Amino acid sequence: MRALDTQAILQGHRPGRHSVGLVVGTTVSVLCLLGVLGYILVLGAAGAGASGVVGFVLSLMLATIPVSIIVPLILLLDRLEPEPPAMLLFAFLWGAGVAVLVSLILNTLGMELYTIPAFGAGMGEYLGATVIAPVVEESAKGMVLLFLLWRRRHEIDSYTDGVIYAGMVAAGFAFTENVMYFLTSFFEAGALGVAFTFLLRGLVSPLGHPLFTAMIGLGVAHVAINRDAVRFLAPFVGWVGAVLLHALWNGSTVFGWLGFAFAYFVCFWVLVGVIVRAVLDRHRQVAAISRYLSPYQVTGLVTPADIHMLSSMKARRRARGWAQHNAGSGGRRAMRDYQLAATELALLHQRLERGVARPRWWERRDAFLALMHVARDAFLGGVRRPVVPVWAGSSSDSGLMHHDSFQHVIDRARVQPPAHPPDSVG
Picture (cartoon, rainbow, N blue to C red):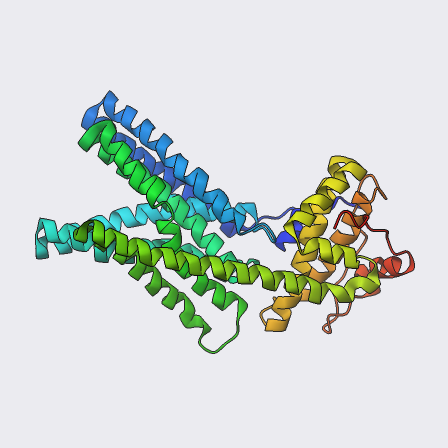
């Protein structure tokens, strides 16, 4: 018997293995982030000596404040079926490192080699901010979403998932960009300039970048969860939407406060639309839990009370509290594993019905069932040290479980249906 690798089951990879692409991408992103921050620090020190270093540290500290607000708000959308932390971190670091570095280079080249020579300093800088920057920055941020679509498509189960990954990329981008803006304001207008810039970028419009890139996230998600004939156009349409919103926001500055108010109005209603989309996704996920888990009641791994509990965040919290009272901290972890595995099982069936499930999808189903079985024993106090049931071999092409695989888990559940927490839990 061997210890259960919960994360491997939930994320769909072999125990003890990690995605090489994810590791390499995260490493490259960290190096790019350190390189950009180092470049900003060197410029600050070269321009104002010790005062520049102080300005850099102040800017870095201030830039963390909007991030500490935005990221939790983004993750609020992700509570029912949380995305893997490693992927969320990768997305954030890509935005903060790779996307910023690419944008810094291409934006500078675009203005120095094209817009300023062609239109003069004033108009050239405005066109750079309104035309070049939106195209370059949204492309740099959107690249990682295409990578996730290519390599981790099975993690994108809804439009909300696309918004979450897009939001994390954009939050990282905004973090590093804010450091640069705050430091520039420090040099140009001192503490008062930094305070004004922080008010504008950190408090008035912190959702700008996440909202722009969310359009690409919606397009990428459409490809991941649908099989319609035009689905591959969706990322491009989303990219166009992101660029137009970004250009509207940057371009509104020339029209003063009236232009800013109009751009804010448009972005507000786009934000409302994204929230409505997230609410609809949540309702569909809850419906999927009830629809696809109900047939599993014959196994004893799922009961009507469990389905009710899984359909509410409040009931899930109460269930974790009950499990901790019944079986300690290990029971609480087991309940959380059960909730995640059951939710993933329902969404797997939803993907199967849509025709976008991965090949050999039944292997993931079997793994989820095994995790649910072991976790259930643990939070009920049935075993002290959960272990993975013995299983080997592959499932048949029909998707039915072999006896060599997890059939004995199902058989045992039928013969001895495990008890379930009292109704007060769910």
